[in-house]
Image 1 (cartoon, rainbow, N blue to C red):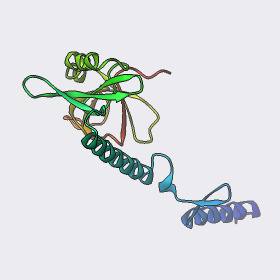
Image 2 (tube, helix red, strand yellow; image 1 turned 30 degrees about the vertical axis):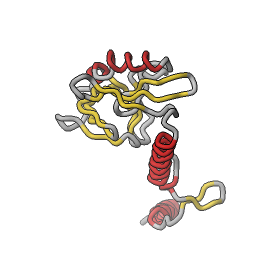
Image 3 (cartoon, one colour; image 1 turned 60 degrees about the horizontal axis):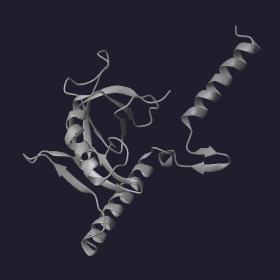
Length: 183
């Protein structure tokens, strides 16, 4: 025979179980919210993509109408291999990898080009730090392959669960740094 205490526990457990099965909306501070619209969610990523595409079209149009306007410029080796780009900033020219990560600080245009010739491809062989999606932890990785819109990473941790050839990440889904993050 069950006592009143056991019955109350059973009923409370069934109510809690039923309540979790009936969640239809999420409320924050008295307002209904869409969990997909949170920072890092798909809606935010799509907005960032649209803004980037729009900015690229604007810069291209300005460059075509004002040839003297400083615009990003791709830098290649003598054999045609891309090394990265030099991008105008308020402080000068910034050398960036082919996937958009800055290499050093702003400098003169010739210095930024020299940085790309010295480090543009060599930096791909160095360890990198990556933060994927909503994960706040930075992890050491090696860049296996790089493209202007994505990178293939292989985690340095030998115990990490990963494919032997690494995994592709879109640049909207990963933060990359050539230097270890500050703790």
